[in-house]
Image (cartoon, rainbow, N blue to C red; front, side):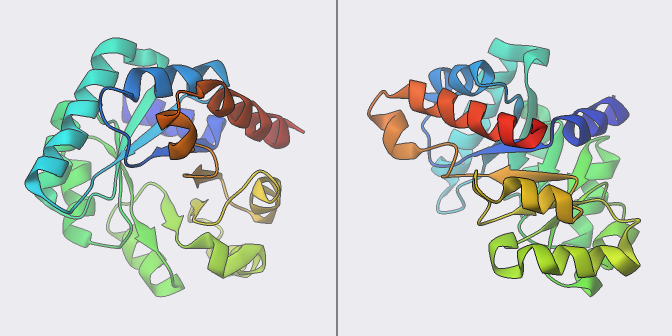
Length: 216
């Protein structure tokens, strides 16, 4: 199963990062992304309170129950082993973190899930990969830039990386060309203001634009 999930991530390339959207608006948000051609979804944990963490788990369960294999579902901003366990139980197939935590990586692999920890430096990326990470998230990619990814890939091309942070429709293809196997896109794609205004067509059109850039 994990091999199939990894293939979906590498094939589809664009992960929609869903942050700060309540569970009531989640079905319409997911539907809008699917209609736009994006099936890789990352629902992020809000670390501010236990209630907020519970809200993320509720959203994961809702999406998995309603959409099943129509989406490839991940949990984001996972910073503890307990959150990894709960996210997996709620239906997440891949676990994404903003940082490199060897314990979280190893727990994710124990659970049979795809591990995508965050790294900023080559040392962090190698540590993450050696601990079992399937993909390393270079974050924040907007600060690092495409030149960094090219330089990183020269000696460390065996480590698959995705670019997250600062990715938009104008530069998405440049990150792919530079060597990233995929990208994660948050507010530039999953526009919270549009969602809360009920303008889900904007989400669909944005998704279509990203897909066209990648294919083009």
